[in-house]
Length: 211
Ligand code: PRT
Ligand code: ZN
Image (cartoon, rainbow, N blue to C red; front, side, top):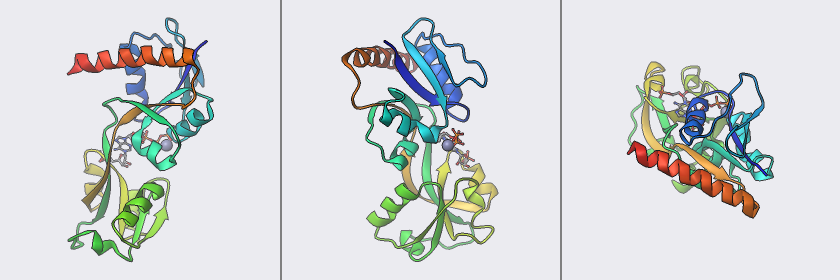
């Protein structure tokens, strides 16, 4: 019996996910271009996937647990359990407009076009704020949309803010604060729950040691 964990294959969460497992005393040999690997000293199998696919794989039970940004989990809207916040991959999903635009409140975006890779979260937010806007879903380089006349505003992930700055944009609203989280399938076997409990115990010890 093994616990199967899905982590990002490459990208912003990959290194910190591997590091966390190592700090938990779990030895995995992380071969490049591998689809999966096994820990040598813990009953854990590691799958390397695109972050966008992780919620679905965990929901379907192809993996039992996964490490992914809260932003992705909320956008995919899957019935998963959040078992632990992991303290890395911190960012915010924010609304940004051209620096030259006079912005007073979210009302200023009523009837405007907003480009984003997060149409679900943005749609919910606009509904909550009673704003009708046209959502343009684009999968990458959202920050260039206003400059090329595709949108009046964007809703995108921000960490340092330098990408917005370089594209002549200013941040005007925070929609969501996010970090990497450990998610789990809702119907694990008792043995899997026990292994997950062990892993969570180690993660909490690692987090405590850092505080
Ligand atoms: O290939 P795969 O699909 O797995 O990866 P990806 O390209 O979709 O995701 P990746 O690796 O870019 O990000 C993975 C996760 O890291 C995200 O889902 C977030 O949870 C988290 N994260 C943390 C970030 C950022 N910070 C971040 N700054 N994800 C993206 N960005 C991008 C942002 O979209 C913008 O383009 O970085 C740019 C802004 O950065 P600053 O520092 O200039 O503000
Ligand atoms: Zn992705």
